[in-house]
Image (cartoon, rainbow, N blue to C red; front, side, top):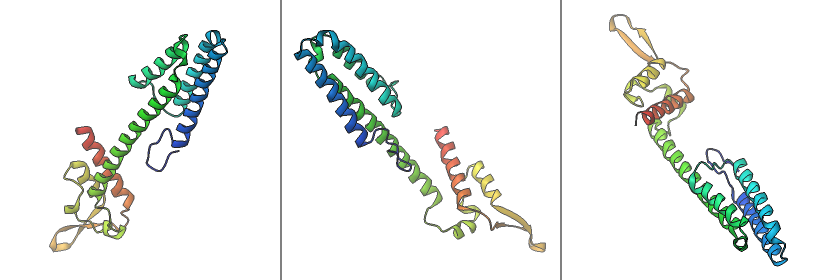
Length: 194
C-alpha cells in the first residue's frame, strides 16, 4: 500500500502473508522429512519456494542488487536444498530478514523525503496565502542563485513611471504552483551541486 508521498513496498499485510507462506513451505518440508520422502522432494520444494519468494519480492519492488538481500535469499535456497539442513526454517528466517531490510530502506527514504519537504517548506515559507505570493518582492526571493532571479523576473513586469523611472511590479497571475516549482528546482540544483 502506498500512501501519498510515502514509500512502503511491503505493507504489514503483505509481510504477514509472506511470512505465512514461508512458514507453510518450511512446515511442508518438515512434514516431507518425517515421511522420509523429503530426501527426494525437498530440493524441488526448495526451488519452488525460492522462485516464489524471488518473484514475490520483485513484484513488490524489492531489488536484489543489494548484496545483503540477495545473499539472504541465496543462502535460504542452499540450506533448504541440502538434505539434513532443510529441517531448519530458512524460508521463514530469510523472508523476515528481507522484509526487515526493505522496511528499513523505505523508512530511510521516507525520512529523507520528509527532510527535503521541510527544506522546501522553509524556502517557500509555507503559511503564506496565494495573495501574499503575488505580492512578493525581489528581496523575498528563495535564494540568490541566478535561476531563482530568473524565476523572479518571470513573476514581475517592468513598467515606466515617467520621470520617476522604471519600477518592477508583481504580475497578478502568479500562482502558488509556479513558486513551488521554482523552489523544487532550486533544491534539486542545490542537491546536484552538493
